[in-house]
Amino acid sequence: NIRYMDRKEIICECFLVSRGKIEDAIREKKLKTVEDVGYVTNAGTGCGGCQGKIQEILDKVNGGK
Image 1 (cartoon, rainbow, N blue to C red):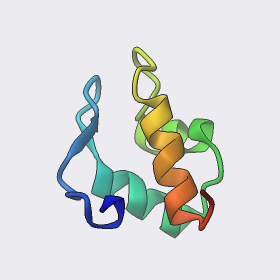
Image 2: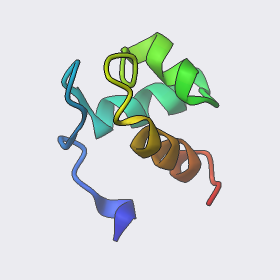
Image 3: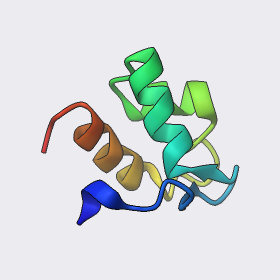
Image 4: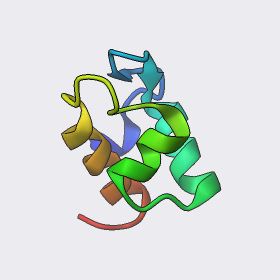
């Protein structure tokens, strides 16, 4: 179940940003876009390969899809 995925899972390999760090940033700073997450955590700003995963996390945390 995606709801219980490991918070320690590295989402952004370029900057070693974990799922938990991304989830916490989204909640604490009310982030809405992949760009917002990148600005706050650097996740997704290297090669860009994790941007799809970041969007999935945004959708989940913000009650979307």
